[in-house]
Length: 426
Image 1 (tube, rainbow, N blue to C red):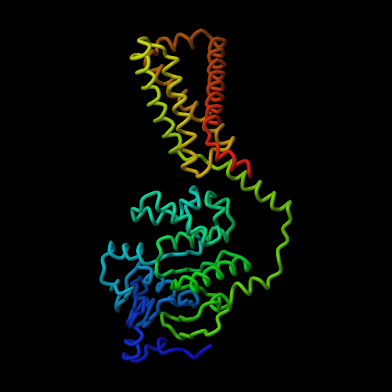
Image 2: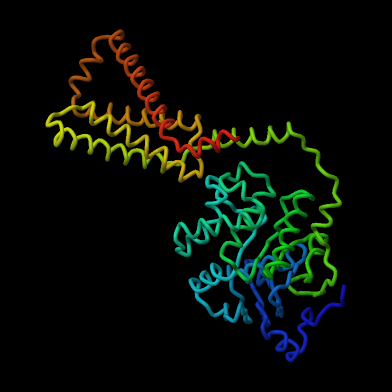
């Protein structure tokens, strides 16, 4: 490693100005103070820092050293009390909250220790999220999200939710989400903090490859010196100051270190068990409420079509036709919409739950409507004694079971064929 550069101590103005030319990120005399009941806390003290395009910088320090405060400022989540922050030619410190939010969305990708993935959405949908905020058309953002997931080695996991992925896979989804907007700067806050040694090296190898092959500038916060050794530059913080800024001419090659680890034995039986576990998790995953909402809207539209068919074609009122139109359309829409929402068809378990829950909801709704419309008739039926009431309950339960079975069969019938093949593979 080379000796510490002049950034650590502030350096002379001429040297700083020379290195500012073409720099991606520049901090000049930046300080951050917080006022508390105990007094003023100096989180950062008169910091000068310049990061050139294509650098991989590790920011190291113990708790309270100021590295997290620095990361918040670099990520435009906070602004300095004093000093200037320039990013890609923009004076970020002078921008409004909306202006800094725009810079975050356009120029910065974030990777967090806790992954911060939406739990009930697929990897593909998580990666699409930043593009949705930009207003990118659905077809284009799906294409870019698929490319980002492929670049981190997750082309075969695009339709898996976070609970179906390992910790390393979740972090790779988070990296793909950070990369999908093609930001020049990637901020990684303890990205390996929740990962074991092997998975940490996998993530570091990926970051090194992105930095080397795509020229992405990376600023990585960590308290572990062996993680920082993978960076080409290490800045150490203490008490709000940068005490050393060391350029590492021979950074640790994470991919080479990963190759030295003993291979984890995993036979065919383990692979089968893994696929079966993923399939079971997918089958038991909750069905989004929007699927039920789409089903209800389609059923209402189908019933209306049935009424129009009765009036215009049959010139008669046939309730069975109205119900048939509604049930057929709601089942078709539910099966297709669920495929689009989940990225895969409803599993057999999910179809059974959708059919039962939706039928019960409709049954309660119809029962309440009848009770309000014909309270005397309902009271008379229930007033014939326990045996009569029991027969009514049995009849209602039989009706719910029959209608639920019908909806289940229709959902299975309308399930997309490509989706059935994909599920069969698992």
